[in-house]
Amino acid sequence: MNLLILGSQGFIGSHLISYYLTRGYTITGCDLPEASPTGYVYHKVSVLSADFDTLFTGASFDVCINASGSGNVAYSITHPLSDFEANSLAVSKVLDVIRKYQPLCKYIHISSAAVYGNPKSLPIYEKDVCAPISPYGYHKWISEIICKEYHTLYNLQIAIVRPFSVYGEGQKKQLLWDICHKLQGSDEISLFGTGKESRDFIHVQDLARLIETIIQSGKFSCPIFNGASGNETTIKMIADIFSKYYNGVKNISFTSQVRTGDPINWRADISAALAINYSHSIALEDGICRYIKWFEGIGTGTD
Image (cartoon, rainbow, N blue to C red; front, top):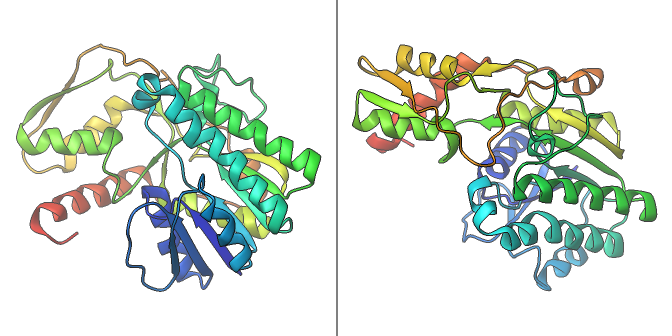
């Protein structure tokens, strides 16, 4: 099976490539940075450029996985137009190229749990009302509507994944990266919020497994799948894991300051994913230990 992975040099995209190469798929990657790929074909091209059309006229793909776009909530607040171009407009471009040149190519869209905003109750179901609280969340929601447009009007085969808090080795932003960096320089650090805020964490390798399960299920009538573990974890619980496993005695406190665009509590219902035989394999504590080991390896040149 031939897979095209857009955003292949990003955190999620690079893990998708690593995972699917071990599974025997033929891989083509597409992104903006220079790269020296091993085991797959790579094209340095923007999905918004005219050259992107050439990609679909030069090779045939069974599935296109879109891991491209911007994933920075704070940036979306200060640069909403740029975020719209990356997370909404680019999706129109991708789907229209598929429509014109390879309408049988299945498309998996990686959206975001940010479309939910602050839910009224937990767990969060895919059928719940979307109420984004950031430009990023709105633009991901718009991208899903674009997917539904191309499925309904042009019969493209599409599936949508809404990842919750994705983490894993190689991630150089967000909560775990922030904690590691702060602990590297001090035994006493502070984090935003109260510690009672909660997230539903999924290791990036489990996200790759979920996407593969969707591919194997053949469900491409524009279904939506929550990408999560189904477990609610407070930020205080994350801090306690770091205090337990990070080198030395650490003290992590909270500022009680809330950042604009951050949701308060998240826990996903993953019944739709379970119904297609998905199961997550990496426990959160084990995943954080792996992350700490990777981070420590950066400093010693072993990454």
